[in-house]
Amino acid sequence: MNAEFMGALAQIEKEKHISKDVLIDAIEAALISAYKRNFGTSQNVMVNIDRLTGGVRVFTKKKVVEIPDNDLSEISLEEAKNISGKYEIGDIVDIEVTPKKFGRIAAQTAKQVVVQRIREAERGIIFDEFVNKENDIVTGIVQRWEKKNVMVEMGKVEAILVPNEQVASEQYNFNERIKIYVLEVKKTTKGPQVFVSRTHPGLVKRLFEKEVPEIHDGIVEIKSISREPGSRTKIAVHSNEPNVDPVGACVGHKGNRVQVIVDELRGEKIDIIKWSEDPAEYIATSLSPAKVLKVDVNESDKSAKVVVPDYQLSLAIGKEGQNARLAAKLTGWKIDIKSESQLK
Image (tube, rainbow, N blue to C red; front, side):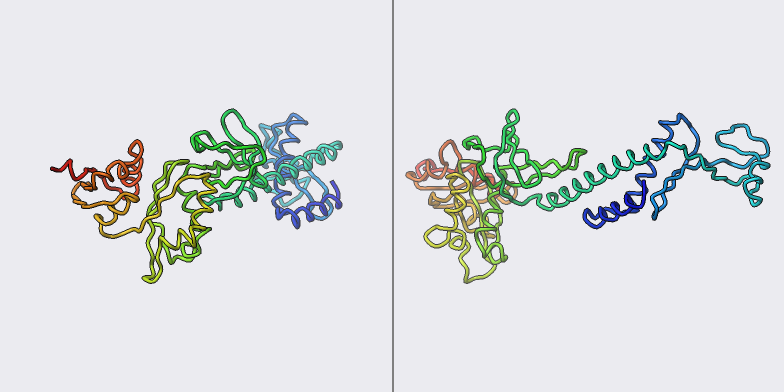
């Protein structure tokens, strides 16, 4: 190694934001291993790299004793005094043992260490970038399939859309742009591993936050979401300002805001309801589009008995019980639905 190499390290520090001292420390540590590996020694050695010239020197450390028992780790007081009169029993002497052919080994090792550290640093930067996107949505491009996993390109990384996070009714086509919810970012030796979802309720939440300025600004608040991906979602919203209609803000003029989200979710139906502190009112609204006549709530076990007109019973329950199921999940209450005639 030489001064030119040290200049290259300074350039790497500037461009890659990897400390020159950190690189040199790593190279020195690697050279100790390389020395022991190539010269078959178990000596206690240290490597010193001159920060200006790039010169490499290897030293073995020996303890000063009266009569050495181990020549690899000990040196007699007499020999130590020949090196310098300052040494006493118990001192550590650094003796240079740099091999003549060590320069070539040092250069190869240094290059390997630098390349490895640059890769690690770049992986770290990418990880930091994507870990901040956890619980947010990003746009990705469908690239390929690995078994049943869909691999989605997200700039510098490929995200993994596992089968459980895929919507059963959706097809993911090559080069198609899709919005995905970032579930988790893991740090691995091969770089960050990003897991994403198309089924998570957070996807719907983030889409509304991006499409509805009142939600983004905190005027309208999303209180709860229940979702059966690909089929239907219920979302409860509340306005922090009396003169702002939370449902109207989410629907938009002629339904344009919610339609953008429905299109992104490929036709998934979305019921937007007004949240209420009153459980009876909240439960009645949650069964929308069905009309409710009466709600009796039992606070002790968070259950409610709901009465609807006979002609509204199937609508309130929904196909295969979906409407009632989503309403229960949205409100957190157990809901028992009866028609008027069933109560007679």
